[in-house]
Image (cartoon, rainbow, N blue to C red; front, side, top):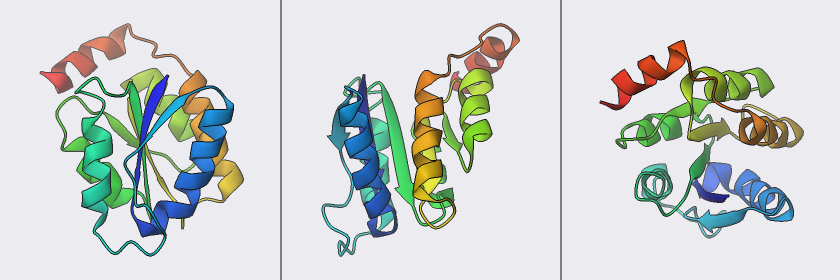
Length: 143
């Protein structure tokens, strides 16, 4: 799977660790995030291009990271075709996929430890969308 990553400086460390995890698992990573921890640009500079990679077809999914994950989720969800779930544990990742068909997740580096962040990514990647009654709601959102 092709997965776009976007982060500002506050999510930089987790972006690098998640990138390694994804590559080891055989995924192709498109890194749209800050090139260094010291990059001074706003999170919008890095998050929006990662989110835009999904509806453009460049990537199948996206992961965006920052300090809290809130601003990153807001920016990602402004991109038409993105359904970004703010995740802080495995259950939010699972439900984001099962019920909301989340094609993007946002994680706050200051909110969860690294092991939890990696589990969030794993669960999100492995969980299928249930469809059914949820599919109608998603169609209404995407319209």
